[in-house]
Length: 237
Image 1 (cartoon, rainbow, N blue to C red):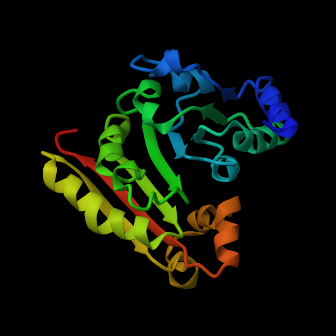
Image 2 (image 1 turned 135 degrees about the vertical axis):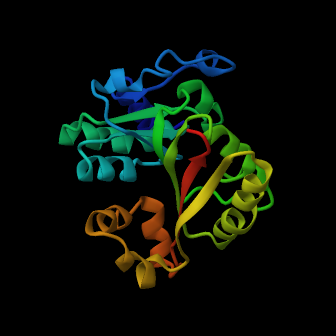
């Protein structure tokens, strides 16, 4: 392991807004902040979760746009999280936390109805491994255990495979299999910057214009950016 990575890992340990649990704390167990994230933030504001957050560009960017919301970025890569965590410290943001862990453990960290919104940004499309995609039915079943009724699930991606899979396969199949629960489409565009972004209000345009490291790389390669947004509906809630 390179010295630069080790240095970042060491600095992550000094950040109070970076949470790095041991596997035994979350493997078939509830993390001590489960159901208590609003206490951790010291307010009752909505909690927005960014999955596979990488360098945390969206968590940081949205925290600046929405000071009345709380943001949590999850990623297993500590060296990536360091970039966002350092920016949070430099900007003095109090409404951002990062969790270094596997997304598979999401239900160990969050309680029923604790999350208001989930963002999945430029996730690995897992070609040939649909079950591992972050919008697969496996993960959708995990999300409904933490997402509030009326909460949002947002996907921003350069991948045609992930976009088509989510829109045409996993969400429809999930909706068919559920009794009284569904993800209802709110927004859909396969050319976000060319035709889609103008349809959003000014604040949401700012959010969608946040560029992640990977998005910038894909844009430079001429790839089109896709965006899907769904609202979680639960009858009798």
